[in-house]
Image (cartoon, rainbow over all chains, first blue to last red):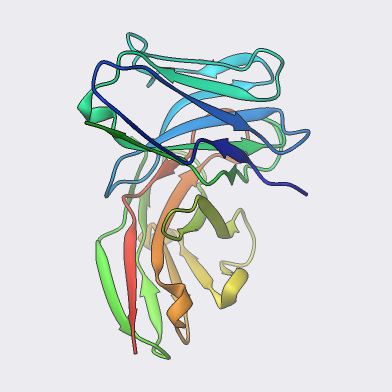
Length: 115
Length: 114
């Protein structure tokens, strides 16, 4: 079974530029999460999807971050414009369903550096 | 408020020595607890989880953890550490189901010396 795929693995941009990250969850997993992991900290949830609907985006900085999962499969997270404090690893995770076992499966992450 | 505390930011152990990583949690309902490991440049891999039943749970790579409700703890242990265990370890707490997100600790970085 293929795992959660993310791309790119690394990205360096200048502040005020835009960037997009892509995630393809495990096949059949209905729930998808985007986390931000700042160096030295644990992952922090940004947004959670159930199929193509948003379940929780309370911690997403909506003035600059957006995310979509249009067909209920893969997802894109965008930052526009980026700030220095957005430098972090962005992790995508998936889970079979919101009512099932709580195990989340994580992708390798995208390391973003904003200069 | 839900929270996870990992008191040790960095631990160094000798290869072959035993290991214990501490985790304390605060959670309003019955907690479901997890330990994840993150190797450099990698995502998080689930080591083990506790939902109910036997409070000593076994995981992958020879790890185990013990749930102690009275102490609100879920410490991770390994009897003999291998150099390949060097990584970042995260404790997390969440619900049995539903959409309440997992809450992660800040992690403990494990270094292994010869």
